[in-house]
Image (cartoon, rainbow, N blue to C red):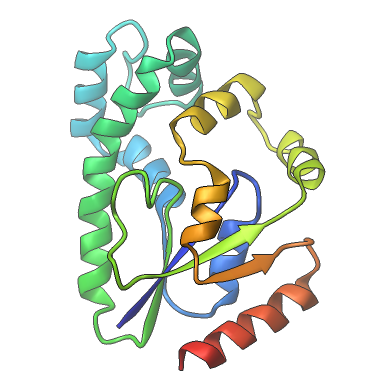
Length: 189
C-alpha cells in the first residue's frame, strides 16, 4: 500500500484535493469533529486539563476557540489529548484499507506530529495567499487569532514544500487540479 500525505497551508484546498485522488482518505479534521461530539473520555481529559473552558459534553467549537484564545499554550494541550485518539482512528483506517493500492492521509499536522512514514509520498498543495484568506473568511467561525495560533505550531510551508515529491498548484479550478492528480497517479503506478 502506498501512502500519500497531503501538505499545505490552512485553507489551501488539501481536503478537496485528497478526495479528488479517488482513493480511501483519512480526514483528520472530520475525525476530530467526531471525537469532540462522541468521545466522553476525551471530554473528561479536556475538562481535567482545562476546567475553565470545558464543562458540558459534547465539546462545542466555541469552547475550543475560547480555550485557544485565552492562552496559546492551551492549543498544545488540546492537540496532545486529541491527537492520541486521532492516531488510534488512523491505525484502524490503515488496517481496514491495508489491501488498497493507495490511501490518502489528509492530516493537518502530519509532519509536526511525526505521523508520516519515510516511504510516504508527500504532495504539497500550493495556493495564492490572497485566495486562501478570501476563502477562509467565508468559513463559519473563522477567527484570524486562531489561524495565527495554528500557524505558530506548524512547520514552515517552505520546509513542507521542500519535503514533498509532488506539488499541486491549486488555483481552485477543478480541471487543472484533476489533470495534475492524473499525472501524479500515473507516475505512482
